[in-house]
Length: 206
Image (cartoon, rainbow, N blue to C red):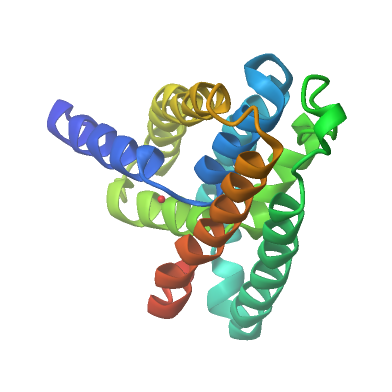
């Protein structure tokens, strides 16, 4: 793979990884509610889970959509329902006054965050677009290895940035009412972040 193609891939990976989406908004909320240390499993689960998705898509999983078009619709329905559920959980996550200092509640585990990638429309859009745009027909396995490596390197600091942003916001949200307002706003943004992708049908095309 040429240097120019790798640089183009890196630019795509950065833009796709750093822009708002379900993962980044949820990590920001996690950083706000639980702090950086407790959010590390969530961060690593997102990164490892997404790279695994790229590998499996590159090995032919995307052909399922071509062979069974109904699976594409099913993925949309499941994704929307699950994201609405997560948005509700975030919106109602503000702890009572006595629990603020103790950071009540539980952040995503590594497994939960990794599994979430499979119902994340933006993750599907990122993986499918990357594989279709940057795979060399005569060197598919090398292309897959490079794409996975580039995303693994670029995605991690990108999502870490959003988590750190959440921890910085937390210092201004020590009041339970403000924390609840933040969580409700994050939940609404989570729902809104998915709409453009679902409306444009990019799942089958970060």
